[in-house]
Image 1 (cartoon, rainbow, N blue to C red):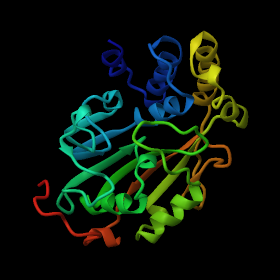
Image 2 (image 1 turned 180 degrees about the vertical axis):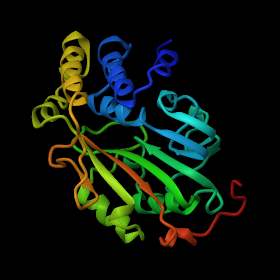
Image 3 (image 1 turned 120 degrees about the horizontal axis):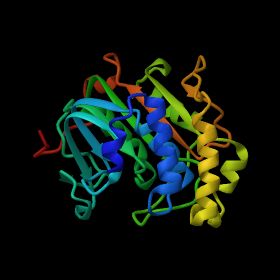
Image 4 (image 1 turned 90 degrees about the vertical axis):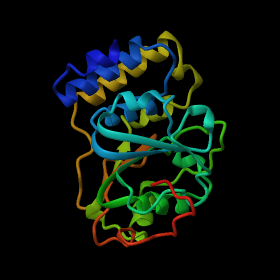
Length: 256
């Protein structure tokens, strides 16, 4: 019911505000402040064409927030989440070059030990001019059962993407943060669950949604990254980037 009602809200900003209220005060389960801020950004996505969800599967609810006009494939090491492809994300992906118009990589990059390899693979399977979206934690506790290896700064990711052939005009790194205080509170156990936690998160998110955030500067970094709970990276693979040719060889039996 929630997701069907969500589609009836025309304004992207109102839509994201509705998500914040629902997730904070109504939805079952105790989600983190970082997840709420990620959902706010994800709900703005409208993706067309052939789309790959790295680290995803049909069992993840975040895909219901995205407006998709096309085919969504997923790849994951765990068959339990029902991905289209089961493969080790630390290795070369069994996917042919330039297969996808869009690639999303949400809440999974920190779980991949070979982070540079998977970032190169993301660009390899993306066609020139294609869009990629990545969410990653920063000031956030260790989590997950599949490993948790990285907490890199926004400056690191800016340099990493540039070293892989992108220009700072090709992408933006948004700081997922509301305030220094909320980032500190997010690390406290009581902030996660219960009525008190939900109410405080609701107030923080409503304040955040009511003001303009993520103003772009002359660089790729957007917003104050010093106390970010995580980062939202949104970019385009330019035609001139090395990934427009081949960043790594396709595996035998590649998914086509």
